[in-house]
Amino acid sequence: MATIKLKQIKSGIDRPERQKRTLRALGFTKMNQTIEKEVTPQILGMVKKVAHLVTVIE
Image (cartoon, rainbow, N blue to C red; front, side, top):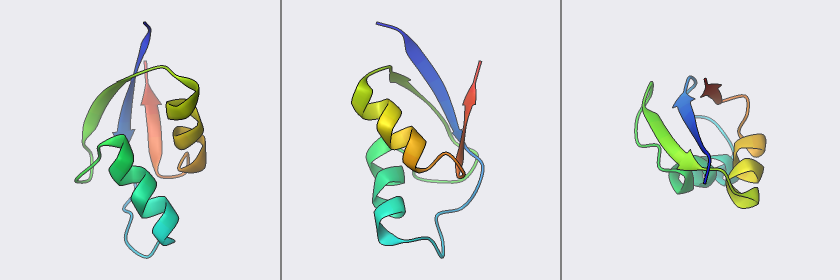
C-alpha cells in the first residue's frame, strides 16, 4: 500500500479534546515529530480533521 509522511507543526494544547485524541490516534506524541502511515480512508479522514495542526510531507 501507499504511505504518507505526516509532521506535526502546531501544538495540541488549547485545542478541543476531539482534536487532541485524533493526534494521539495518529501516533503523535510531541511537536515536529514525523510519522509514516499507510493511506486508508480512516487515516485520510483523521488527517483532514487536524489538517491545521499537521502537514503532509512529499
